[in-house]
Image (cartoon, rainbow, N blue to C red; front, top):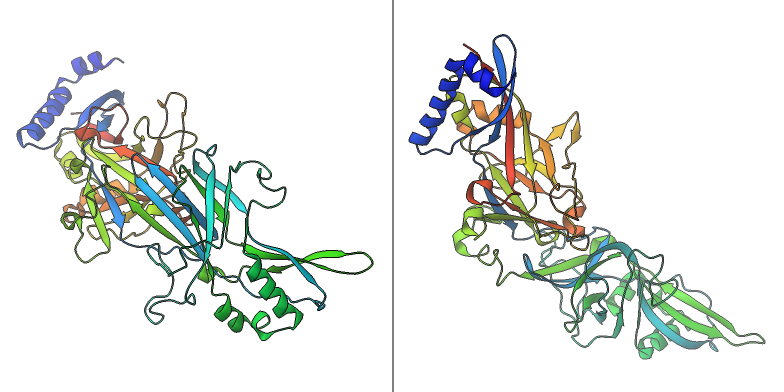
Length: 463
């Protein structure tokens, strides 16, 4: 049956709906636009509410833990939407399983070696220079009885003159890199360091046998991108190590090596800094957007020129979504009950590419004015991760979708909790180990074709 015939058959319903819309407009409340899908049975119809007013904002975390994630992030990258991002990796190297080394053994070389974890972001055709320096102080927590881990803003002093550097172009999806058949990134360290360590092994010094003694001598390393290069973000396994090559003389020279292994995940962390100057996020850290009694800032989408909200786990950005006008649906004379509610989040066109990929998973968690994450929204017992569909060619069919029926039914019936919100974030461990990001726009305040919207199916009473 066509919509026109429905209106003719049920004039009372049509004029009731129009009256309801007019009431919303006269109260200066956001309107609800009805779709063209009406499924009629004897006394009821199912009405599709295509749009209702949502309030979007970007939530920024002041700090978040970056230790024991299993990933080293080494970054020098400028993002037009998210600003300039720099990340350094701090880690400890432990003593080796010391072999029997003769006094005639001769040193060959020593290198610091990292292996890719195959994650990357940006233009991988650009060469990057990686520097490594020694940490000046033992790697300990500044307030061990208060602070239990290292955070993105944790920092330790180190020698600004690198021990070693390596410049290379990496193919992160290849089996091996262009630098070495087996090693992803290999940075040659000074011979003087290798000679001292070999000498300690020859005399079986306590320094290379006892863990605490070794860490007092070899305090730790920091790996960082050279400021002269930028353009790509790489992720590495946290199991980096130092490899000392030497040889034993004899009838046949025995060329061998010893490994100084990665020590402990608890003492590997990523220091992540960002400068958002010149972006829509430039003002998010200002006092105007501090959330009282929390460690967050919140920037309304209306404070940006294109009504946008921003998601990027490794820089502490989340998207907050509120539905303050949903109780107005109850004022419609034909409203009976909600059947289904679906949240559709379409990223802003032009903000994502295969090289600047969207987060493969994003979860919705319940929250409120404090911005602390509560339970995540689940469906059939499993946490929803967005069912991401991506169209990198035309960008016309890219979206995350969530079944929010239970949540919407809860807040629509109780005006006391209509300040509650949902926060979109990336699940652990992606929230601190990748730089995938997304930009969303609020449909209420933009003419863009791609935005965040809520679709509600409700039962309409036919009088």
